[in-house]
Image (cartoon, rainbow, N blue to C red; front, side):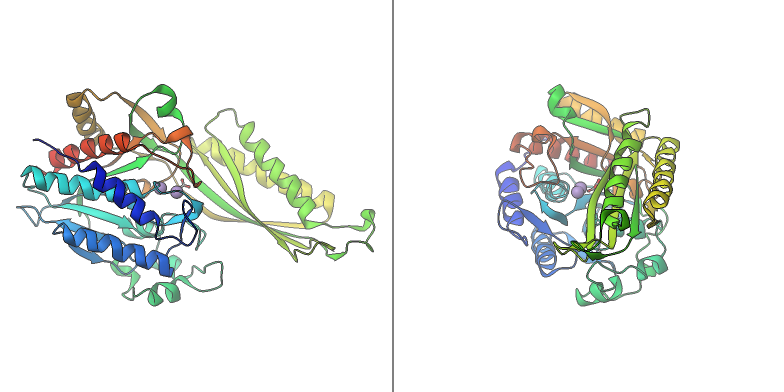
Length: 412
Ligand code: GLV
Ligand code: MN
Ligand code: MN
């Protein structure tokens, strides 16, 4: 098979999609079901249709673009990722797997390859947790990991429910229809930027993911007592933000002292009420994102955070309440797909390394319903979730070649 990846067009498409954003270039912000997200979806659908793919969307907005194989009723081979982007993000997270997946399909079409199994590009809804507080919404529902009732009870930060928001975006069917029937996919492969520095540091252009680390997240509410910033003397204070500050540091310590560098914890949101310069904070909401490759170690760190919360609440006379949002298990990637990926790398003499994905991806949930694996390419300085995220055209094209050959091997 002679694959000719159209690198220039792919890079131009990545640039064009980046302009569909709520923020000024080079910043990309694309929150699920906003007008910008809908425009981006329409843009991707038009490109898929131009490539002759049959497009459908399910009731949560997952988009499937199918190149029908000669054995149309046999399980499909899937690839894809997401196009939603957190506030102040870059151009490549998720997008490389979507537009790279599309280019992999187009290059296979140009090569004259005819798949036996259909090859399907999947664009997942809300991989990012920005709007509804939980990541991988589309793949959680596809895999049956999240029950439709749990999804129906989700409310976005602006107070509108998922049901309302998806309806406004034109997705109206019952969420019960999202779950994939057993055996829908023969295999699923996701191309993604590494979002860390290891490939670049080792000067290795490709990573074959062997497992995906397990994410968990909590919401913490701290309730103290507000008051006048001048009138209330220090001994009388129950400042919720000071309690929160102590807790944030305790969270950092819990991760740093877990015994392994694999434990990572982040407080990315700290909402302070009432948020006035001369008013003592009475309420604080924090979010904790905590991940590990080892579930027992992650649980121990979470217990340490809860214990610190109890101590701080007592000492400062505030109430601290923790609510678990999700605590997922890690995924093991399918050795047969990793083998197909490595066969392609070896054929081209591309150096590759097996690696753990420390970021989560929709493949974490796809691995529960299909053999799944991921292919990583480097990103400059390991930067991701920031506007200066960058992957070179050479690295992207190399990833697309290996993805395309792997899809062909799986779909033959
Ligand atoms: C996905 O974006 C993650 O936070 O790992
Ligand atoms: Mn991301
Ligand atoms: Mn991503």
